[in-house]
Image (cartoon, rainbow, N blue to C red; front, top):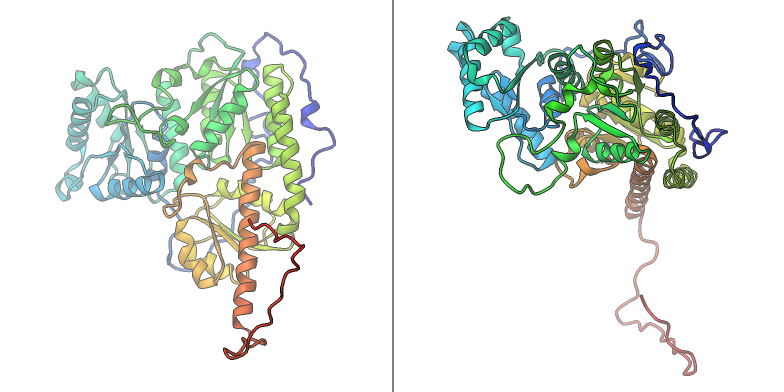
Length: 513
């Protein structure tokens, strides 16, 4: 069925003891499975076909500043500031609040018509001073928008001049992130935020090595629940981990002990500065490749790219990698989880086989769910992504294009299920296809940020959730068909008495419930 276990189970894998010599200065060959271009490597010549429309009717694309702001929610004591109009910040703020149902710290430089013409340096300076005075954050990222990028402001020079003149900002890290709305989508903004943090905060001098410590550059498609699960998997091998960014302690849905104007947890600035002490960096998602390459070039820590952590084979590779890095065998509890997943895949393929699915979202979100669905026997009839993604060239899909939600609705006609965010409601309704809500944003369902989708346990949960959605869709279809048919059995006449069937006295009444 495409998702069968490999010939050698990971549970039986026992890695050789790891050498104490640090191989961090030896760079992997390009294209090697363990190198930064490992896995299926991105084909530079391939581009996805685009919708032929002159405009986007129902946008699927989310802005890069929104993705950068989301990534920065995983940094401790951070207060991002969008350099643009108030509307730019309001859009991102509302979207994040409705998805996570949490307070989101986000500020703006509130550019006006005059400052747009004359320049926004004064707005930046005033915003930095106000934020530092009121919130006292450890990190203030400045995110550009289409307005300031189009105007061509010298943001780097302005920030350097402000830092020189305003010594009260000396104890606060200020990081510039270029995220124009017209370039890329949510994943690119997330990647640029992480890359900017590494470029600004990670020094070139390498600290003392810790063979039992690794870094993880988490992608935008991993929610707080996924990040927490990934940390648990790594710690099960006796390794310590620095997750960048870490949404599992900032947007995990907890009640804080005290009110804070900054983020409520995440990776600290001090932890970012010592990323170079790790023995390896796990890069999750193709859009994080640039950040992984920069960290490897800066510190010499080898980066290992994982296009996905959803599914049997990707999780097997993760387990083998962690076993090799730690010098320990795969724990018995994880081998048990693998066995449960194999059983779930065998049970579920009867519900998936032959079904047609429409899928839309960010490229690496699609790359996580797409192979899982096709491996279970489903057919990807229509896949729509907001930006070009050459690494999706190998995805088995009948139709794959860069488009919008209108394209998704047109391609989903006749499908058994549509997988998209809450914004997919209208095209799903028009195509008369049930919608399984996933991705970002999901504002009309509870607990989606805490949903698991990675590892053995998360893959099993996702298989069950999607399988049950297909079963519910089939039952609803049959119920609608039956309701449209004429009633062949008329009810008994009110004057006709139903025959009474007496129960023999010696037969006990059956228990109910």
